[in-house]
Image 1: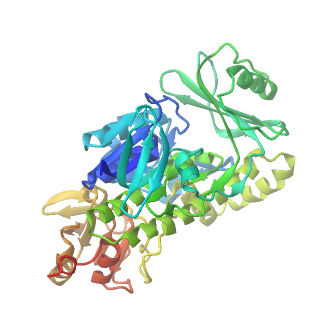
Image 2: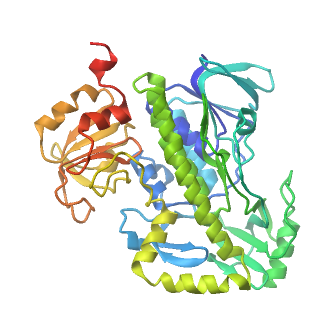
Length: 494
């Protein structure tokens, strides 16, 4: 084997997955067809959940100073994300190129083998692994698993025969990063009678312009980026302004097509990110969901490769993330109707605007677009955190201040003993090669959203609560075996 895992695509999903695998000690090769990063930045920020995920891995400091905001939107209707009471706010104006750079340096620091200028042209799967054909020198590489993180036009997806149903594009929109334009920010979508306009100010004197016209012919599949003159022409028709003299940094087009694979796994081939789901990039949810796909998959794939968990653990990747992707397409298609719909969508916008004055409605949609509403099936029980992501919990451990996020930076599971329970710790002893058992005292349980009476929490490496006491129907060893494999004694046949 050349590596345990080959990842195709060095975008946010592929690089995040490489980092997660290396954090768990699994060897990985990342192949990307481009000789160098494109420098394009479709995504320009992080949702609250991605901020939490990066905090869990200690990555936030690598981005330097991040501009954050508690303002969000659903289909152009404003949302107060601060109503969620999360420890983090969403990040604004972080170009995707910067995100990719941070993730690549992290993955390389951990020992990932990232090879650019290597285009995958095919693969063959057998009972022991996958043989990948790479263009150029015609070399074959072999790994136990192959993961396609190669975008919406994924070659891995096509070659492996994944079904990719959905709805075709009806509208094309243009995106351009430009210099030398004096534009006022329009961070919330500005609808005109004939289309929509959005402007974001990025670092370095760059403005991001997004424009789209209504009533245009359904777009044909482009094989090259549009000319900047197309963007300038649409801008002038919609706003009356002239940006034709600006300098384009890069130009792209996207559509409202919405598709999702029916399975995220076929044998030894898996998909993550845009290779598994494409949609209108409303609120930047695509890149953020892609990164979270990889955080969900990484620890599971690593456990299977290391032999500490059975291959069936990988099935939970599909079970959990396919539902997340389905809900993502639902909410982005709903936003598409609000954003791209003309006068006929006005009544819906008006009614939804009225509903958003209700705090519970605003919190529901804010959680939806922030990724904080995700809850996995980890087994029954009454504890309100079961299956949900763990909010940042401030703790004192061995006389030092820490948090639940900091405890996850090793990429291992964490059993939080909040009641100094020696019996509980003893029941987890056979899994301490895969999890950390931490006895700690919460600083302010109420302020940190810890349900009253909670004495213990089992956190998966992705930060979701797999078991809680009291309140889980499963006992602790059952939960540990489900998510981290058999007890050490059982696994080793002692």
